[in-house]
Length: 430
Image (tube, rainbow, N blue to C red; front, side, top):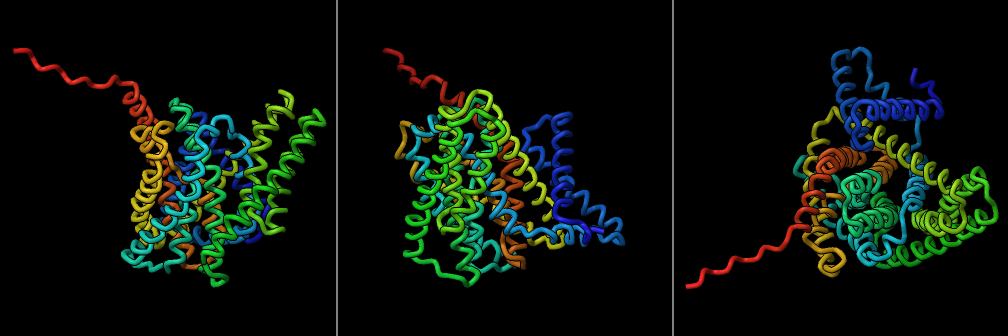
């Protein structure tokens, strides 16, 4: 019986399914991993629902609800997986590349996230009322915050394969890393306000970005520096790998305990170790082990999140309005992304020419693991069901449609940028 499953068995089942899906993809499909896993998860969800309809006496969906009910998602994701996801993303980010586009990254990952949260929240409020699901405005802004976090895991692999311009690739990577921290901070405040545990005010926003954000940055630098010094003093890949794990987990726990931004602290520590640490504190052997370990862990955790999202969509399948509101949310999210990118982009026309950067940044703003982790951490209830349904549809569209067509868009933009300017023909002389 499902009710007898313990936490380890549930985790084992998820890892086994993800491994099987990954094997099928590498052996037969040969698609980009995130696209393949999201697609197979969606197909498996549909088949599960059809099987339940064909054999209702098995109560498959009820058993699945019991299975998923065994996990405390808030503790698992907000205080568990996120520390590894954020550290891994930062660890693989090359500061040399993002340094040249640091101002676009800073603006897009802060003001861009806030603007996107407001636009999506307002649009989602009207979408839920139009469909008949009626979500309060504050909870609509919660959806806006969690869906404004972009995910570099899929898009960076696609951009590297399509040989996207380095400035655009660096902007997407840097923005995805830092907008995770900002989106999580905004999400946390909005959830507290929507749940009746606080009020959103200018004073709280100031505290959030100055005290918590600055404190998280300082703590991350301190913990990252300790990890760097420890790694530089030895040359043992096993111990140095354990130190990197300790920095990710210990940094997140410490930040949460002292009341500063844990996501920013972990991202900062990961950025320091992934750049300064890799260059000056690790031998070539250690560097190879650590980079591969965090790459595999990042991909596995994202895959598990995609799978869980697909499983939850099965439970939500009984109410078609949850998917209708998701379909309505897709153009709202895309419009918010376009506005938040288009508004500041002309400021950096030399670094990021609007003609090539705008389509790539808008269509390349894929949603993924962090958005799923945040929505799964919401309190159970009708509102979470509506937000979860919308999140699933938006991410499904983002990964399958945007992710599969992004290479074609990048190749087209590359041809346009290489094309010689059109010179008007001279009028024939009389």
